[in-house]
Length: 118
Image 1 (spheres, rainbow, N blue to C red):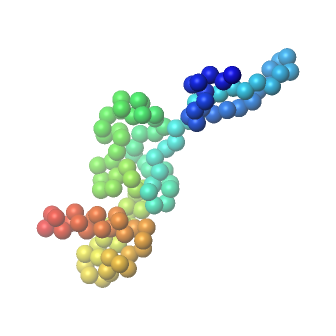
Image 2: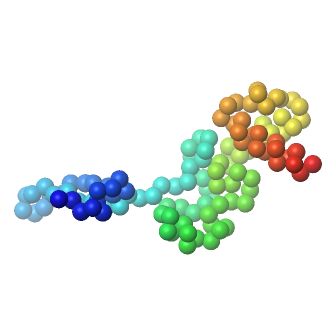
Image 3: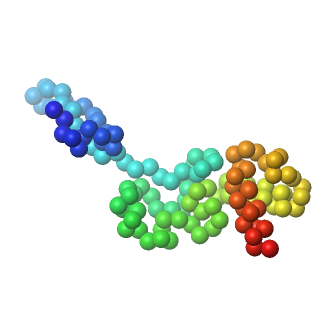
């Protein structure tokens, strides 16, 4: 019978052939992935790497996110694209409805913050 700690999805199962010829199942912890961009799915740079929840709790606040707007959620190229779309909406060159659906929530948040400052 498998140990209860190995019966979760957080453990990776693999098979090994022992020197005696038997095939046994072994388990190891899965590696944690990197933070991904909310739009394109690329790795977000500037945030802490492959850490589990306990490891992330021990990290400093500056290691966990970037202080730029949408830092830690969007990669730099997507942030640049959102800011350009926001500037177009603020200048009146584009309506919020004309912005692509994926970008709309980020542009709407950026426009809301910009109008709150004024």
